[in-house]
Length: 550
Image 1 (tube, rainbow, N blue to C red):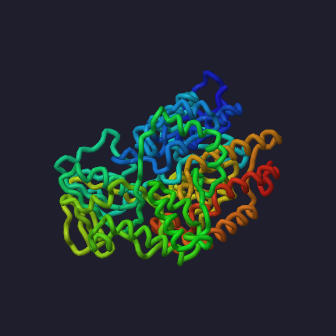
Image 2 (cartoon, rainbow, N blue to C red; image 1 turned 45 degrees about the horizontal axis):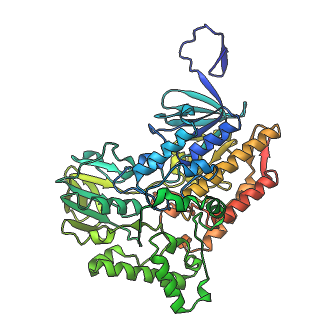
Image 3 (spheres, rainbow, N blue to C red; image 1 turned 90 degrees about the vertical axis):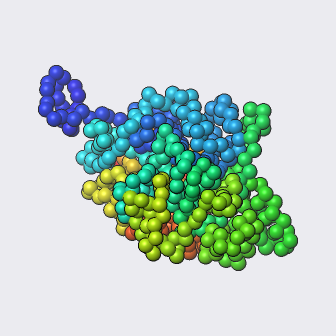
């Protein structure tokens, strides 16, 4: 017999307009870093599980972000899974910070090595998920007209996967080509002889700008918020990566317990060193060519304004020496926020691009973009920048956007989009009160994207979810949900931790400031990856105290 629309239809009978419901134990949304691992673990536990992804292949962010210059800024050998030594060692990275094509190949290697494709449905978008109180299950619909009935719904949608695409009036009128970096054409874009405009100089915009500047006829960069940047050193790996592969056990033990999930951690405190020693440490770490200056120099720069200013001035000094132009320095070097309180990009020759004769800038703080017109971009003063290609490096609705673009409804039909429109709340970024059996990764109030090596954090969250489901089943229970009191306590802890830092005093996507009307709250947990991991483990060890089960 086949279940249809909640009823039962005898085999061979014909029912008009009936939609067959698939039944699953667990449905995973997303086939990126978190989704692949979550699917693997739940399948090993014996659950009937399937993953769904809008893309045509695995990779998540590394499928979509195929723009010129896209690459890691976590070292390749730590942006890894550590649950299987052979899986780790049988893939060899070419260099310290490889580019998107190589990363996407690695994601395919993971999917194939674990034989995951048979349980992934690509080119399928989840449109809605509604909690069925009477059955204690989720009813999920797709853009293909499918209906899936599942006990557990697990979102692995990514922290930065909902692009801010429609940001300017008149975009549809543009006669040339216009696209967001995370929706880059898979067949590439030709820049030869083209006038190209790049809007935005965050981490993505910087990668695009430094990569295409010598390929275009003319490049116009529209600058609003200046960024502190650090130079990237990207050596090739020798000997099939033998040196880093030999560190498997060390890295497996170290990464989950550092402040940011990277291999390095903060060293001596600011007060322990003399001014000369501080300068020497900053110079040494800056020369490393990684994110170490941000994530492993002096933790005090996130709390103490005087320390923040000294470290910030050190980075400004390095940038001024390379720009060698007062106007460019005023445009591109921040002075109104501290180093590290915004996402810090790594770059390769980015600052020098602005001294090329075919590159010009627009100061959007003084002369904002008014609209897009058929010929290009019109500014507030009425002037027109004529363009053939417009690249929108305009960021994302971080943390919340991927889920609020799905119609998710929990108890009493309550909408997650509406709830988060009032206040962004989760319990450890893993569950949400009012949404039973909904598990989440890479959402607010957990370490994600900000101050976190993503694979370290996503793997830990996926493991916690798998363990929680395993515990629930072992207890003969079918439904789990955090209590309102548990969630309120986590939100209060999260806010107290965040408000003690300088992050809370800035304006950035870290606090949702780039999305009009988005409730202000620090999106990522700032207590540290190791601390967060311990708190999650304590909850599990106590039998998920604070979570209601039935």
